[in-house]
Image 1 (cartoon, one colour):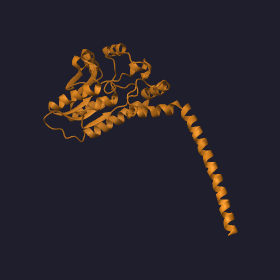
Image 2 (cartoon, one colour):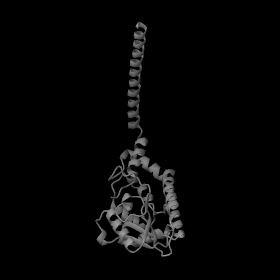
Image 3 (cartoon, helix red, strand yellow):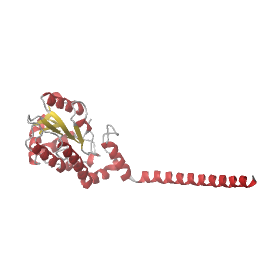
Image 4 (tube, helix red, strand yellow):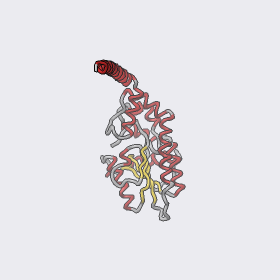
Length: 257
């Protein structure tokens, strides 16, 4: 009996010491983790970008000041191109499974800005989204018609046309920018779209998700089957009259509701 009591006491003492040591290790780990999280902007900004792309962040106005360099590195390095290419590859994989009918009503919808055309040259001069948006300056950039194509989307665009999809371009740009937009698209290598849809005077002031949903609904009423929709904003893709599949391209520079 005495030997059992002795053994129990030893085990209890060892357990208490181990528990105290574990708590010390956990406390030390937590302290170091918090310090690491505070100091490592890159880790914070990666998590912020994830929340933005998954729409967990909801509506946001500008990128955090501590993330300007991170967004710059992401947009100008290989990661943005890689992410965009992966999205385009999945879109093409889906498109190849669509049975194209002979009636010419199988359609795909593309947004323009940060989907077909890249405004990166503009945002390079304006803090990669860290500066407050200036509509006049951006409109002047649009009028210059100098935006390059987003390579992954350009390749997808051409593949879809070869397969027989009718291409509709649905943009938040205004009707008065039609000439500049058409010029820019053609200079960037895009052609033979079915229709370019811009905001008319009646569409001004509408949230993008409402405006684009209404335009997609008009297409479905005309008999088009919207198989795919590619855009960099959730408001390009969500709402009503949604496509069979939607493909969200990355954009950590700005948010449009």
